[in-house]
Length: 288
Image (cartoon, rainbow, N blue to C red; front, top):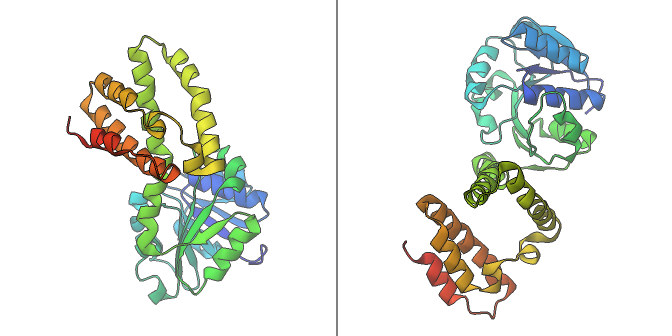
């Protein structure tokens, strides 16, 4: 894709729209600009990306070759219905939902347009700073085969790794990301709560867990699940697991412990195929 040929516009000036726009700008991609329900938000995003703000969708469509619909997932289809009021022939529409496929742009191919989902596997938490981390993001792309080469060239020009996936796998893909990121926060919150029950302050509890959590995450990413596994399940330490189960008075926490320990047990069996884990497995499968 020639960077000086296809102009990129955004409908939606929130965290994702601003982050992608600034990342594209930093990589010398031509931007048309932003439309948002709040014109002030569009102006702010345009200033941040050295592009234009548009007061109507019609104006943005006219000046854009590629249109990113960076609105909440629940609003993508309704936004698309607004876009369909205008000339979309030869236009490329993209959204950045992890769970939705390009099928949300239903009928776009009939009117001569091309739809894609382009999702960066990155927690975009800051409207004005997350773009600095975008070079580390792995992208998944999915959609119409006809212009797929242009989307691939765009990601390649950015220098990011990517993979094309099928529409039917989008939701399962996103579930994986949530389990490895957002839900880990929930697990960490449980761990903090248990330490607070032991009398630790919020600050001290975090200090206790911080290095353990970060070192484990780093080892996991660099060495994989089997080589990183430690702890009582790894050691087949039944007595320690029994003690852990005995102090978890919250039934939901008890179930979380058993569920995750059973998953860890699968890894331990791969690591030590000759070790007998039958008693531990029975303990974890016993109804409480």
